[in-house]
Length: 296
Image (cartoon, rainbow, N blue to C red):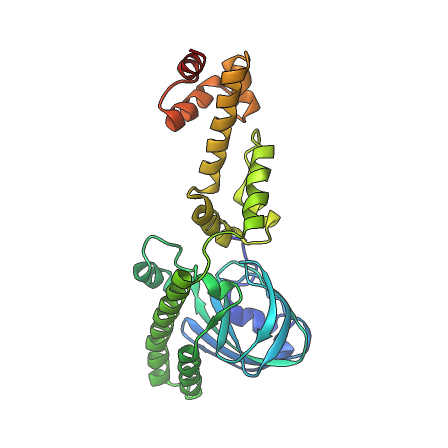
């Protein structure tokens, strides 16, 4: 993930001193876990990026007019037992249509990264799929967060020990739910998102297009875009652009008399040598040899 650098150390600090702090009803910090309840008005409830994995649930049904947790914008009625969440270093965009009460749990990203990486190898430890979109229905997490909330009220050493273990249990259940939802639900970019990205790459072959540029085109965070793009195309964005460059170069080699250096420059390579390395990696042969065979 290409993270946005946060100016806020933790979600607890943001809610203790940020513009939404007047609406906090209770906030408990136990080691690397924060629990919070807030009664908020209608309006803009967006948060800046923090260092935490942060989950939100409503205490009563509420209409969310607009929300984006980094995996695309959505609008829906958000019921209790639903959870949405944001990864570390990702900002939220939230507009709520009515006064509402929420409960929030935040996990320090640095503290829990290793545990999540061990639990979910070969993937981004903070990518929980549907959690960052329209959310996951998880009554079991609601029950666990309620137990954690009641325990946090004690504020003693036993409470802190309980919350440390409960935090790991919470994350394990969350990972299991998110993985099950990923197996059942759609994978990859939506059709219009994939078309827009691939067309943009074709139109900008001579440029080094970044993940951030492509993610902005389809209103996703770089964090989620890279995963969805690879799921849709089978390749990371940079590798997909190399393939498009190679295909364009093959067209020019076959149908034009441009020199290799001219073709290299037209598809984004400053030197024929760099172009030739890419071309051989993609096709198994040199541009000159490929042209000879194509015209034989």
